[in-house]
Structure formats: structure tokens, C-alpha cells
Amino acid sequence: MKAMIVTGASSGIGRAVALCAAREGFAIVAVARHAARLEEVAQQIHNLGGMCAVVAVDLRLPSAAPAVVSTALQRYERVDVIVHAAGTAAAGSLLDQTDAQLAEQWEVHVLAPLRLTREALPALRAARGQIFLFGSGVARVPTPGLGGYPAAKAAVRAIAIQMRRELRAERIAVTYVDPGAVDTPLMRRVNLVGSSLRLTISPQRVAERILRTTRSRRARLNVVPWQAAAVVAGELLPAITDRVLERMPRIAGAQPLGKAAAQDAEGEARGLAPSAPSGTLDQALAPLGRRMERVKLPRDFVAALLVPGARLELSEVSMRWAGMPNKNERAAMREVFDALTAAAYLERSGDETWTVLKTARD
Image (tube, rainbow, N blue to C red; front, side, top):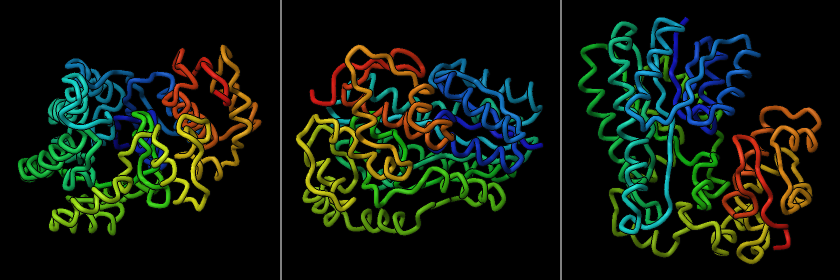
């Protein structure tokens, strides 16, 4: 059985890759900071009849890479694939970001993958393995409002090329992934509206393409080819791109959630009327509109949860809403809680618990 290390496995693309790979027969080492969420992923994999070890660790720590690789070797005696899906972001202009914000983005996107790959290199050599590094369209066309994120992703693109050339003779494949616009909570966690819902794809679609690429071992994976082509065009025509970004700043999703303009953009994308005033519950939930519609999660149910001082537990609330929630319904509820936390309706009090700070009318 082949073994795959997946970072950022507690949510978004990383979680989808871990589950998809387990279905394909990979033994998984799931890595993230949130132990409770990793245990959920492990339980789902075990329910599928698969194997999963979890490592709850902050990848920025120098001790993280040895801990992850030693877990893989102790449990499975090999490392065939590493998927570096962990990510972070911070909103704001590049020169306004603090050293801590810039350092976190650089460490998570650049230094952590390098450390982990270096630690796993002997095992990858033995397996003639594969490494996946995640870039972004903003690596080629940096977008205002995303601070150090475009620079970090540009560095990922460069190290993917360099690493691929250095490891080719050892028959280790290196794949640079441009996932396109993906429906994940990453940007919402830093209070940005994110890409328009009509442009996004699901993490599951990205995961399926990743698994397909473990067989083809191609050097580059553009999950949404037309978006990748648009980025190339934007890079080749910088003057036009500058004018587009000036006139349509919403296009890249780097607008703060607290701005009515950002909400209006999402409302227009979904064919809705202009947004409610900034700061309302409807504004906080606007980026999740399509997601909530798909899982039939009523806005009024969410509003009824907002009783100041109440303690909300993810499993209990999910069961109250859906009876026996499936993984998709549970994930949707978590994304709602994350959005409400970003909008200051909730305060996290544990891995899966939140405290209500204000009502839907506040």
C-alpha cells in the first residue's frame, strides 16, 4: 500500500485530497493544527476501510517535519506522495502587513514545504515518489489587498520548477498545481469575500485531479484551464490588467467582507438584490449563499442560534438542523460558524465550540 502525506488536511483541498486518496487505496498521514478536525477526517477514512494516521502540529515549527515523516515511516514504512495543501492568508496591503503576518505566510507556504520535503527525501527516493506544491493565479498576477500572499505563492511556483529540475534524475516527480478559484473557507477566515461563487469549483474536483496526476506524474496541473489561460493573458498584458483591477477590484475576491460593495458582488453573482447594510447577518453569510442553498441550511435557523452567551457545539447544532448530518452538511455548518466568527457574531471557545456574542439584529 502506498503512503501519502497531506498537509492542511483538516479542511478545504487538503481534507478532500485525504479522503479521495484513501478511497483510491492510499494510506494517509493527515497533518494540520486542529486535532479534533483531523480526528474527524481519520474517522471518515476508517469508515471507508482505509488507514489514516494524524499529526496535529504547527508546520512552522522546526520539529514538525521530523514528527510528520517519522509518523509515516513508523506506520507505513514508506512515503510515496506529499501533498503540500496547507495554506494561510492575511488581508491588507503589502506594506501595511506586520512582520508576523508576512512571516506566517512565508513559513507556511514556502519554508514548511521545503523542510518537510527535505526530511522525506530519502523515503521519496526509495519510492520514486511525487511532490505536489500549490500555487495560485496571483503568483503570476498579484492582486492588491492580499498582502504577502501573492509573493509567497510566486515563491512556491519558483521552488516547484527548481525542485522538479533538481530531482528529475532521481525519478521523483514534482507537480505544480494551479487550482483556480476554489470554494474553501481560506479567504473568509481572513475576512475577505473571496472569488465570485459562479467562478469557484469544489475541493473535491481539485482532489480528483490530484489523484489522476499521481498516475500521469505531469509537471503542471491547471485544474481550471480557462482560468489559467486568463492569468497568462493578464501577465502578458499588464497595462490592461492594471486597468481591469482598478475598475473591477471585486474580480479577485480581495474585498473585505465588511464592505457593502463586496456583498453586492456576491449578490449579483447569485442573481439577488443588492446587499443588506454592512455588518448584518445577511452580509456575513453572503459568501456562503450558494453553499447554504445546496445543503438546504435556512438562514432563519442560523439566526435563531444567535442568543448572546449561548454555547454552540458543532455536532449538536448539526444534528439539531439535519438530524443525522453527513460530512457535507457538517462541513457547511462549520463554514457558517467560521463566517460568523469572522463577522464577530461568535467567538471560538474550543476546537468545535463557539460562544455567541450578539444577536442577528445587532
